[in-house]
Length: 445
Image (cartoon, rainbow, N blue to C red; front, top):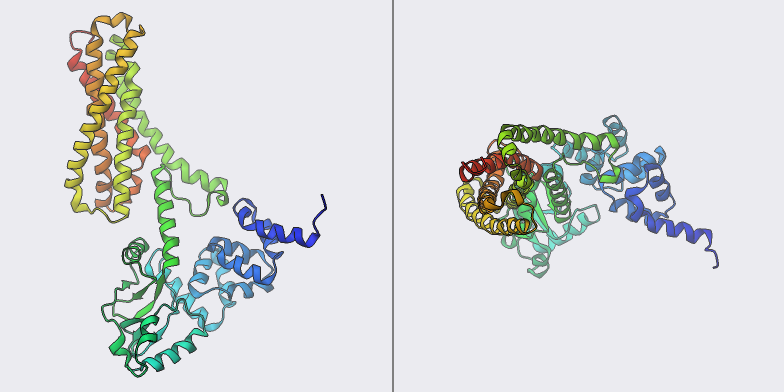
């Protein structure tokens, strides 16, 4: 096979850099980036996440940092600065030109998860007393600078208060001499600068906006949030919820870029709490030690009982948490959810109890219950009734715990599957042995 020229091998490694980015150490990422020609490097740099951009900027020689910092829009530069060590921020800020530095400083004053922290301060603006022709000429001059988007032009008064919005399509189809105040739409949907990013993403998704204006308490327009910013927020929030549902704290950087100790801290906390919770399961079994000693056969079905409750609770909590995240349900809907889940829990419990009776029958015919031949129907009734009770309780607990956490201003995603399973394990044992005492009293117990 004819060997490739050295230049083509370097080009190939550049193409593959994006695919290998997450598994390469920082030094090799920067080395691969520096192999690119300028046009490829610009596009690659802008396609990286803020964390990836920070890796590049901090890895290249100091003389090159100005080039890459000035390639970023103000909101992107602010995101990058939040990814670097605090002591490195002043130096990088000085690399920006004075207008951009002021814009970035203003953005950094907002919390990272607020609308103000997401917005870009660069947007197309016009005055209400302009004609359509004058507005188009003015926008053409603005477009020579770095505007975030050219889909909408925002109509502001002299104090920079938002009066209305007009699309470029409407501008180009309007009469050239028509005043902007006659073309603009005044029923503008805006978001306050302190609104949480998750709510912002929900609004953009609901109305299918390309961009959303951000205003302060007095109606002054501060910037715009574009749909690409919202996509990043949706991915970030979904990832955070999934991590919490798995019983751990959310990772702040991608999995392969998270160090061993930070990963350990994120995982061991919840794991330790759940481990302590499972100790209550052992305590519950110790409480029913006499019952287990008299009817050892009951111990065979303990994993079946508690896992049924944990699984049903995990299902319910996942459905409710996701519905909350999407804004489909509110706190006031708890009673409606409770009624639905009670019916669902009973139905699922009955179905699983019928399966449990069949399982007991199979075990009987296989000779597992040779010493309990005369009581097999009572054992089946105990298991079946316990399954109904445990599944019902697991479903109700799993669906209501997110409401409880939201009421006390905690993240409902913390009602994770492992937490629900731990809670239901203990209560499942109590339900199981309580049923056994009633049904098998005077027979095996």
